[in-house]
Amino acid sequence: MDLNQLGWNPHFETHFSPLRDDGMVPARVTREDRASYRLMAEDGVLTGAVSGRFRHQTTSLGEFPAVGDWVAARPHDGEPKATIHAVLPRMSAFRRNVAGARTEDQVLAANVDTVFLMTGLDGNFRLRRIERYLTLAYGSGAAPVVILSKADLCPEVEDRIAEVESIALDVPVHAISATEGSGLGELDQYLDPGRTVALLGSSGVGKSTLINALLGADLLGVQAVREADSRGRHTTTHRELVGLPGGALVIDTPGMRELSLWGEDATPDAAFADVETLARECRFADCAHRHEPGCAVQQAITDGTLEFERYDSYLRLQREAHRAEQRQRQKERMAERSVSKPERNREKRRTRRDRRQQARAVGGDG
Ligand code: GDP
Ligand code: ZN
View 1 (cartoon, rainbow, N blue to C red):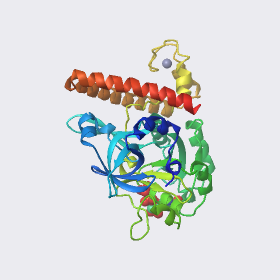
View 2: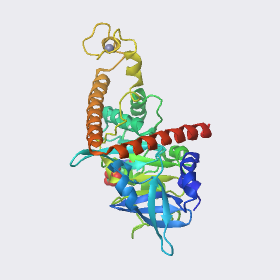
View 3: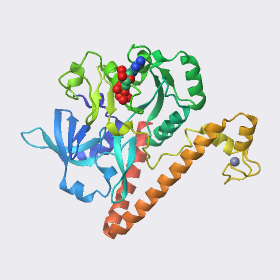
View 4: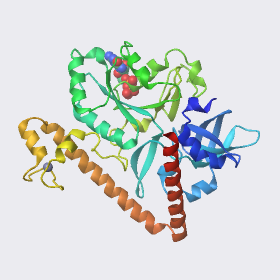
């Protein structure tokens, strides 16, 4: 399998090249099953597990391989197995908090180029939910696209699209019906070979139906990346990455179906660029946009140029982001205390090296 068709690019090449001499191969994680990973490498499918050293040196759940990750793995002789030695720096990641002995971030999907934020045009249509999805998407690093599903059940599709466009600033909006097959052609632009998409949306919006429609009848093209079940239908029981007949890759993991996934990077600023622009006009730089004199945000609500519901949604998401950030800080403090000094120094050196490499990768990509 050609690595480019799996999403390989200069960013990963830059980070992988120092490891190549060590007998490692790059591979993409297509499925995660507890501690076992299915990997796609140039020479085919491998079953991988992380090395003892990796496990020992890894301090948080989020550093473990996730579906969509590119890893450096050393294949075993004579059997389709490999040991994973490193996870290459991610270009994007969807995380969620898992509460255990301490709150940790778990990565649900990595290296997603485009995220389809799906919401149904049936009775369950909510603009506020789309704002939440947009906030999550911007925090992940993937480019958001809003998909309004079940267009066949809605008599006012154009009005709905206009409403969504008014809150999803500069984000493409598409209405589709996966059961009737309408609007699917508009999605082709995100599905070039080697591009990775993920679907985010609550249960019942039609994510599986859309994936099945995109898979079409051509399951042969899929088998290289995943095995079809007996009925040849796509089912979501594991976290996995699926190849589409046209060459794009879809990440479909159960966790992506939940509404409340908060990564450390998710803040509503990008999803609410209109409110942020207004906020820059406030008299006080630290205006909380509640009762302060000279507040441009409150003024816009009075004028009717900013909807109160959108403002309210913004404040709520900001509070959530703030709480998530506090949890993250607390986690870092706890980690600091439990990590020894030599290890901390190693980590610092690693971070500096990563930054240098990232700077080079950015420069190299133009
Ligand atoms: P998921 O939970 O997001 O994966 O949703 P599913 O794909 O399982 O779909 C939930 C239900 O919605 C199923 O009964 C589908 O047949 C139905 N559904 C999905 N897409 C459409 C659509 O475009 N139009 C209509 N009318 N129903 C749809
Ligand atoms: Zn203000």
